[in-house]
Length: 463
Image (cartoon, rainbow, N blue to C red; front, side, top):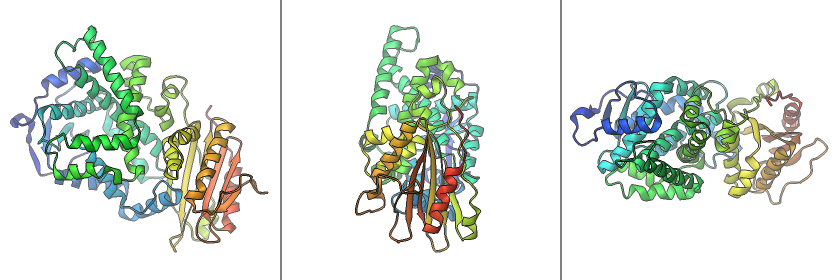
């Protein structure tokens, strides 16, 4: 799914192309499964990968303008969500190509086939997914919804956490309904009241829960295996899929999780409140990755995140430090941060659970030096302590320390450690009740002051 496709280079409309599947029966099936009618026709066309690549580049340049992309990358590397320098736009493009059989465009109300030299069954499966996006758009207005979220990349603090949560809903529903359609596609399974329909639905749910529980490495290998069965998917798509395990986890993991984990999220929402509850989610969107990773925090008593802000700290600008990036990362990305430096999957999951809010800010100096502050808040003091200990446990790897950092804070209330090669590159890690604060890369003259300012901020909890 994307926005307006580039002009020119588009193949003739589907109506005149006998190589592509008819959509009427698929649309009828989807209406029965989802319980929503198509409000208007959904044209389908071929589009070349060159045109799709040009379109992607235009969209990615909006998210990561060339001058800003370098700053974002520098901050994310200092934080540890990226482990080496990359071309952010290029890697996002490769990741999107690895998932691109087709895409739906809310701007035109069309969907575009990118991969057509495959079997009729594969083309129908691709069409079923994109047609679900068309239903979503016609009933819930995906264009304005996604534009509001995309704006956070261009203005102020990036809302990475909520953007991921909404993608869980949008891509998760499309994956869920597509899977139901695949399993229920045989004649005789289109009556929701029939025994065959209910049995097929249980089978689809089992498939989705298994996929949702798979380790990311296994999902990547499954994607790489699948491309060998597709036929001629095209050199660029095949190359992108075969190189998926080289795409940084910061980019690849949330992309895949939006489909697999998102399908399980939507499954759970539907089981709690039917399709009405899924529809209602578009007017009362999930606010955090916590809510989609733990659906009971969305479908039950809503656990909304606590908004966090950082103090102004104008003295940093006066000393030549320029604010270059700011984001809310949430449970998903904090889990990924821990795993980047050796935390086992189960340990990282426990440490990141109980998240209630965060904000990250990076600063850069003209000599290229970068520092960051991360303020987090948690449901309980125990949750905060678990995250602090998990973060402390990765510091030896993250910062290249010769020994583990101290377990006890110094007189300032912080665990202090070398966070870089320079003697004046110091990290500070501290807990205040339900909050955990981290400052890394700050010269000593600023490290204490930044941490003290963070710990003086009063937080207004939403619970």
